[in-house]
Length: 466
Image (cartoon, helix red, strand yellow):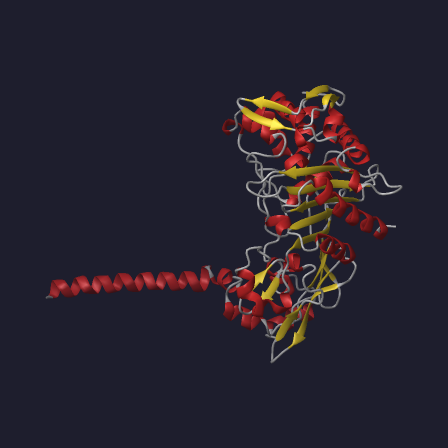
């Protein structure tokens, strides 16, 4: 009996020790993580008694504000769907997303106390209003991009190439954060995924827009030259696999710049094979694929297979943006930005400033260099090709009177559906102020489904910078 009692006592003692260790971990080491978790409803309810900071656009449009409810502050979103993919939401029921989540501590005033008075109030348990977040987004341009997408599923990203500042990031379909609690079940069961920010969370084959990378790799590595001649028949065979031009058109013998402007698949498949898997992947990674993009919101990683996993067929298709190449619209905006910025990719950023409740700047942000995939001379040659694409190639629908526009279309084949339409462009071509990446899911040809939308956004941006 005594032996059994000792054994039982040992079991209870062990369980008690485990319980003590677990409670210590939860209350000491994991306390901050648990309290700040977006799904912690108790913390959310407690924080609702604090006046959250506002979220504003660069042109001073309020995108997130507060109204007083029953002893709590209720978040309101004056512009509804227009910027919901960026702003996200703040809900006692369903947690947080977007800027509301990433900058939650700043919005609650938990970070960067700027005065002794506020510090003393905090120690005394008084509630101090949170900090305001000022975005790089221009609301007028954001609205233009959002309306340009209309009823399509897709995304538009607009960047300032010299700094990396995000000027617009629109995605459709969207959701209204003001009615999130009422709409939640409908939203999470909607097959069109309105809660997803397609600009940074959508992964798509880039189609011919990827030829910006392929051409850059070929010229920068010395594999080819601006005026190298390629045969571009309607079809070519690569180990029993057929690569064809649009409508199988035989384009004859054409220089590289014309092959780029006309988006000649058969010529670029050959260029890819001349490059080989190692160089193609090396340069793609140089532009940011297979790397986590440093950004204010979580971004899915664009990818291209490792060279050892690619045979000649994969390389030929990869060179024209098909096979297993997948990218986000933000990634392709950065590709366009690298050409516009003479070979340098800037870190994209979405937050311009953080200000306390008195309007004092707590933090400010500016552009920083991220990658240098190609030489300046290469970037200039690719820019010339992109100008030719808009002037006399597949990008003619992006032409703007008295403005030189550089661009590249993309038509990305997808299984059992219409292709995705892409356009990557910048303007003015000689002194770029804006880079735009457009994708319209199942939008057909990039020249028809995406280029006109890019034109609309570029035109609006240029009127705002006058």
